[in-house]
Image (cartoon, rainbow, N blue to C red; front, side, top):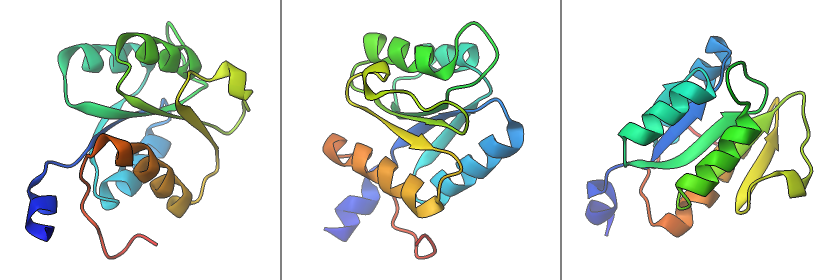
Length: 139
């Protein structure tokens, strides 16, 4: 069973964060948790990636970003165009009401604990049957 688990490609997470340092930190956490990561600095870049790739399974997006839409609008756009993609919305400034989030999405307040972020992503990925490497250093 372990060989079958490891033979699957890791789940791809699209991280959308305009702050380069925060994006790098989030990417490192997500990669160390065994997911594959692609990054975008704003919603416009994220939409371009989503339109060009079919392997994105999870979206991790900040709310407060420059560009044509914020992360909450991006989350709603993704839910409408790519319903299977699981969505985790994060923010250190905005606390959206559950009714403001797209259906079947989650919210995590910043600053978040590494373990909490990893747990949320794994919970979202579990029903998809996607794989992630089980690292020894994420607690």
